[in-house]
Length: 265
Image (cartoon, rainbow, N blue to C red):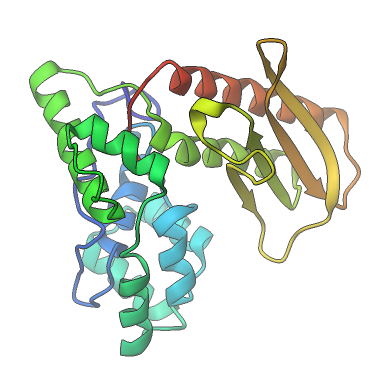
């Protein structure tokens, strides 16, 4: 996370916690708003989601509003938080108290063991019992901001940010190819992923289809990862070039993360 997304302005660490709520009482919605707004302004550090996947998508799905419409609204209108809540009140399908309660409970979950381990190491925490995702993300944000303030630079991309960064690559691939789903599998012991399961994926609503293209990222003479694209439309040269670009970028992220022993989400 050495720079903001487009490098045009100093990055801003989004230290609003997932546990923070506005008048609606919805956990994570303020943080989601801030991250999308920072990204639209070119000031979100690398490694942070901004609307797709993770708690962002969990929030959109739980409240029943269109994730992409939310991203478009915040990115183009640059609303205040209260204006954002007004948009959610107008567009969300599920804002009853019980839905909000269940959503708030659902995001109080544990981090996967590997991600928790690297985040604890990153912030200097040696208590293996601490797995709470929100707490670890908060500590991560504060540690990252401290590094920026005291050292003048953000830490490098960490393994716990891998999914967020790769998800962005896959999302851009779907936009370029109009495919229905894209996924990456990683077969590197140091990453701790199960190769048979996607390490990250993104898809269009209701879209699946069969595999129509695949590319490999080779390290040490064998596939370290591979991107699979799914859909029903014919594949063309422009699509292949888009897949090549995505594969190159994914390889760069893998290399950056593999050189860094500890982590951020």
